[in-house]
Amino acid sequence: MTGRLRLSGGEIELAWHGERRPGARVLVFLHEGLGSAGLWRDFPARVAVASGLPALVYSRFGYGASDPCALPRPLGYMHDEGLQVLPELLERLEIDAYVLVGHSDGASIAIIHAGGAPRPGLAGAVLMAPHVFNEDISVRSITAAKAAYEGGDLRSRLERWHGANVDCAFYGWNGAWLDPGFRDWNIEAYLPAIDVPLLVIQGRDDEYGTLAQVEAIRAGATRAGTERLILDHCGHSPHRDRPEETLASIAHFLGRISG
Image (spheres, rainbow, N blue to C red):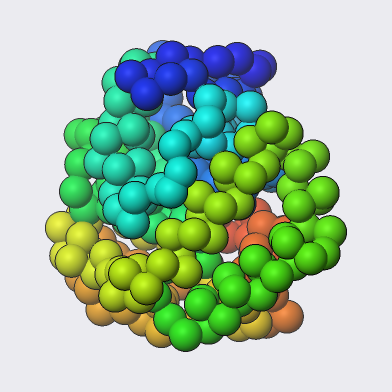
């Protein structure tokens, strides 16, 4: 089921997978820096089937078919999402029990939310290829993405998912990460306050971050209890590069925290 939701900043597109039941936890998917509700493809639906929980996906402002956002994005755009937009969305949809499933920027937003503005019903978070600080490898790969967007076919490939928002989506993400002021971006301060279970999934061949991100989360979120899945032959998108292992790990994690 697809639809639109009006928030204080405008309208966003969203979609539900699975049947929402009174009192049941909802899986809330938070997409990557170039993602959208549609770019998750069938993965949220598969997680919903495997877990028996309904899944909500949505496109943030400036992505997919949601309303555009102003550029340049502020360097604290992930803080704005985790501390302001996501809480408003949960309240508007009356989601009182939920698990966050975030990828890349979405995983970082999940960390900020869980450590800074969680609703009482937050039960856990799945963090795929998360970032808690900026790394040289991140800057190199994001610089290469800019070259591919401006001189290759990346723009046309992303336009399929973002339509008229394609430049907003790309430059909102790329411009922030390549801003010199973003080099010191760090959200490790949010980790000690997280008190719900975490599952961190990272590919060994991730072109945007190293395993130092995973270790920092394990070391910082000491109240949470952190499970790790490190996947060989896997880049920045575990749900696309190693979907079966990623799905099985998430389903197991959700079953473990269901009580």
